[in-house]
Amino acid sequence: MNQGSDIKPYVLSIAGFDPSAGAGILADIKTFESNGVYGLGVVSALTWQNDVEFEKVEWIDYYKIIQQVGVLLRRFDIRFIKIGLIKNAQVLNDLISFLQQRIKEPVIIFDPIMKASAGYVFHENGNTELKEALKSLYCVTPNLPEAKQLFGEEHFHTKLLYQSANVNIYLKGGHADDAMSSDILFTKQTTYTFSNARLPHGEKHGSGCVLSAALTAHLALGHPVHTAAAHANKYTYRFLDSNSSLLGYHNPMPL
Image (cartoon, rainbow, N blue to C red; front, side):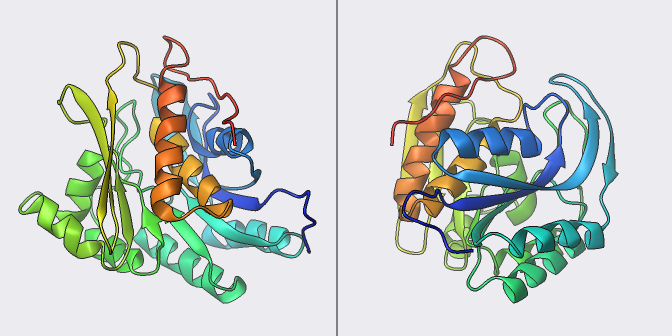
């Protein structure tokens, strides 16, 4: 489908369904809309949760996921894809292969959700297979615990620098204990730091999903990765500061 000059880029989220709309596919769609792109969604998991409780997850079969994607590809020109909650590394690798076969030079951003904010653990193992998948991604957006699980704690910073030769890494710094919250973007060329003062009521359900979706949106708008990262950081900070509850509000970004 050809896009006219007045048509926003189409961006796809493949993610879990969170009924509270704080995280997952609903949060991604709201973020996409607020950042100037048109969001499309494919469900990878059904979850029973709210902003403070997580009861269970039901995984969507891989073939049902790609069937959902296939219908969209018949109609829309999609190049930028964010992948969130996914069953395991094998499904992730198969999904990446499918997207590479069906889309010319797809730009895939992966948010490696290992644990729900309410405490439910999704993935404890499979690091080797996940690392293999990273080679086919454009960017991965782990928080600090997820990055340490993926890459190991020993010589942590050195490992991130080494891995950034293969994939851009946006390290979310919200789990650190510093007075300032600092996100770091590792790229092949250089490293960028985005720092903000910590907010008194800044904890939000799904903030990692929001950051990753905002980054994907700004890449689709044509920004280089460091500029897209800066926009995503700014948008997420506004989201964290939007109210004192655990569910943030999405307000359009001035473009």
